[in-house]
Length: 219
Image (cartoon, rainbow, N blue to C red; front, side, top):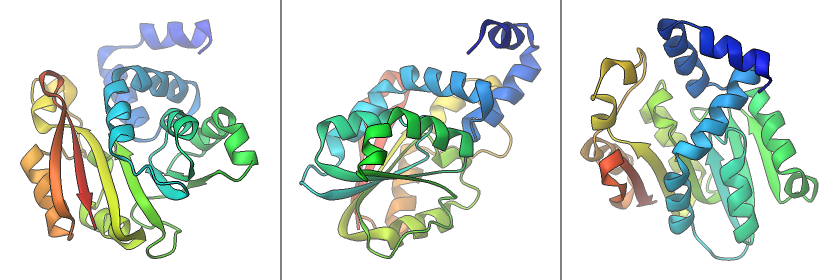
């Protein structure tokens, strides 16, 4: 981010900062989107590592990232796994960033990035070995519909991974809470996964002190 843009961000009011954060966390765009996605790469590093621990490692797996942002997690996984990667994000600006960050993988058709919504994904039934998402579930307008889409696009036996901060994280203060977002306890998210047919749904502790967890379930 250029100095003048950083200065404008620093000088804005607390209320405006909160509104900006709400907008950018849900749909990163422009210079502010670049800044906030870089910040999220740092703050969510443990969740990224957790996803790597739980994704399938078999050669040739098809893996989908829902809400790929600037493409950092995809890049890390691509460097370690012999898989084909897909991504869907609602931000066109993030597609541009993620494509630049993963130019080699995109050029060699090892990675395919799309703009779209988790509630209506443009993929065939039973296509993926794994679908993962990190810190996007709070923004889903219809969680049941989104989960139905994830189930639809997963193969039988495919794995769903959801990295998230529990409701307790946001309940610490009103400044962490945003109108229109939905937060989940570990039990509530596990119940949502079970409702949609995920077997062996488990909550994995990533960093309990920071309220960081991963839901892992199989279709």
